[in-house]
Amino acid sequence: MDYKETKPCTELEPFIHSFWEMKGSEQDKQWERIFPDGCTGLVLNLGDNCITDNGLVSMESEKTYAVGAMTSFKDSFIDHNTHLFGVSLKPAAFTNFYNYLPQNELIDNTVEFDKIYSFSIDKILKNPVLYLNQFYSDRIIKKDNGLKSVLEDIHNSNGQLPVYELAKKNYTTVRH
Image 1: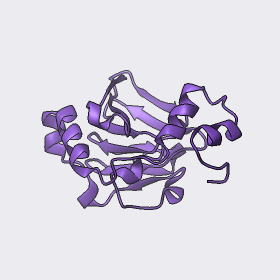
Image 2: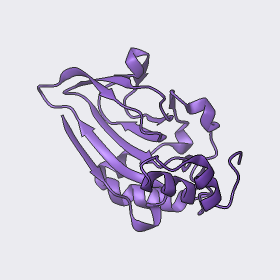
Image 3: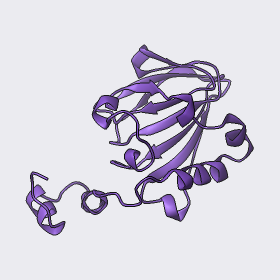
Image 4: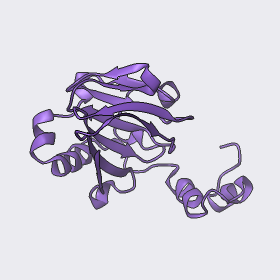
């Protein structure tokens, strides 16, 4: 399996972890375990149908899917006909680009995206990073992520900052 990640342009760094591409190799014919990272993502299937979500979902070829934040691992079947291209969004960044399903409805789900939200296959194949940087730069609905400073503090402390201190540092309450 060949997997590579690319960082987005500077303007998108507050919202997007990375763009990624995964291609199965001739030796592949196995289940791959994907662990939760707290992020919502988008996946375009450029290969044959791909079985994911522990065998419960088949991502059809040439379709785009929203993958909600996971609370547990998921297994996906990877073989030599697998070719996926994805976008890993940072926590709480989905609504900066999309007015779609509420995030709580996406948790632990893989949902086919409506065609109007989907990526252009031709443009992805031609120059994926240039296309996705432009696609998301043009789509920004809100330039500010209200949780950005809170998320950065959690990340910088490796999750070891008490909630009370986190709220105090960000001028909010523990219930906000």
